[in-house]
Image 1 (cartoon, rainbow over the protein chains, first blue to last red):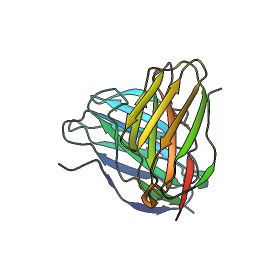
Image 2 (tube, each protein chain N blue to C red):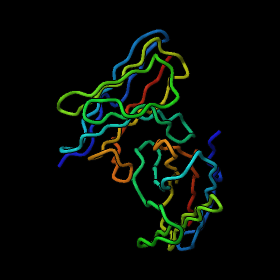
Image 3 (tube, each protein chain N blue to C red):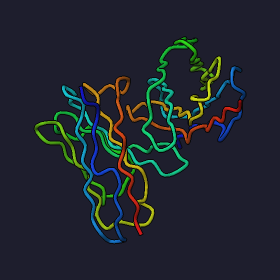
Image 4 (cartoon, one colour):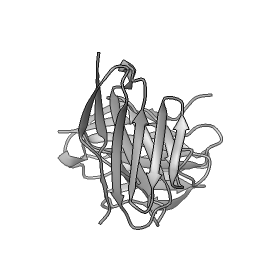
Amino acid sequence: DAGVTQSPTHLIKTRGQHVTLRCSPISGHKSVSWYQQVLGQGPQFIFQYYEKEERGRGNFPDRFSARQFPNYSSELNVNALLLGDSALYLCASSSGLEWETQYFGPGTRLLVL
Amino acid sequence: GQNIDQPTEMTATEGAIVQINCTYQTSGFNGLFWYQQHAGEAPTFLSYNVLDGLEEKGRFSSFLSRSKGYSYLLLKELQMKDSASYLCAVIDSNYQLIWGAGTKLIIKP
């Protein structure tokens, strides 16, 4: 079975632009979480979606939004990009809302110039 | 505020034992994780503790003391492939996952 997949793997944008990152969970998993990991730091929780509804949100500005589709895949959107948005964006899936069985994708590395 | 403290970097010798400590101050506690993350890769799950005590899993063990807000990850018989960052993460009372900055472990031959 395929694990969590994310696209694209790398992305370069300029300040003020918009970006959409995509995530496909493990087959059968209904929950997707998004994290931002700045180099040298631990991941920061952005969103959790379960059954297409937002179930948790971290301390991120409204420029960050996400959604989950009927097939449980998910998109993370970031508007008006700032230099500080440069990071590794990780997606994780789990079968339910529990954190214990969370599996991470390889991440999307975003560079904002 | 919520805070998770880990040493920034540790060095150990191949074949030896190393203990990586994690202290936390969070709004509530519903479990603690340890993850391993190799450079440029995603974190991979190592252990989960919700009750006090020691959980052993092969060469890796994790300990939790909820009254002290303290956990450690013990790695035995170190191998070069254990060179990675080790992340401590706590589930708080809102069931959000709060992460530490990670401990970079360097293994020397």
